[in-house]
View 1 (spheres, rainbow, N blue to C red):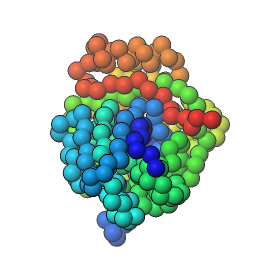
View 2: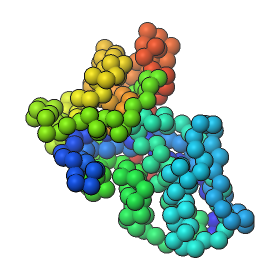
View 3: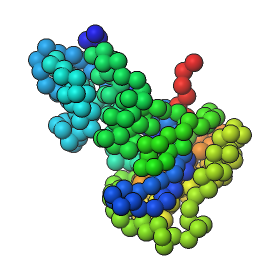
Length: 296
């Protein structure tokens, strides 16, 4: 068994996000195209003799008890397999918190993967995904990574052709958006047909390996709630387009906005405009990244 592991937990963006209906159990059926990006958190795991799960992090405001998905993920496997050893975890958080990028889910997915390896539990990725969905709908995708169509509540995944390499700019304003608020104010039945994104056209763009085609059809039905409630998000989207992004979109329930570029210099110039230039007041956190691709 391994005594320590170093892991990377990658963020995601939604190239398309549609909500089909509200289910009787309170969840929503969705249909969305999810894409892993290279921006990631770093997680260190250490096996210890003293029983218990201990978590520390570089951000003082994050919970380090069972309110943290990392702790829940570790406990899920360690309880199931009656692991008596202790586990110490350190999280260096880089992905913006509560940003629509599945940072917490990705951290939990990394812990599931790490605990499985560290204690030789022998679970397959599919078996980890079955357990992960009990903790959060995004966790199965965070275990899968890459590019995928996500359906059901997010747990039904179909691998799609990868998004070709391209600059992706991420900008998160100095505000938090409650996912519960967004879904409570999204009455799908009252939304006109044009409010629903063209998910199939995004998939076609991926199949054609065309960045412009994918970018043209980016869409997120949750923007029908957030852009009205939070005009700052709309301003960031508009600024990215002015900078030369092929298109821009809010990821998940927000508030992070991403822009897809086909020109590295334009992307770098836009990054500087948000970090140190005229658009600096719009965003607190800004990152220039790219699609994550599976190493061959």
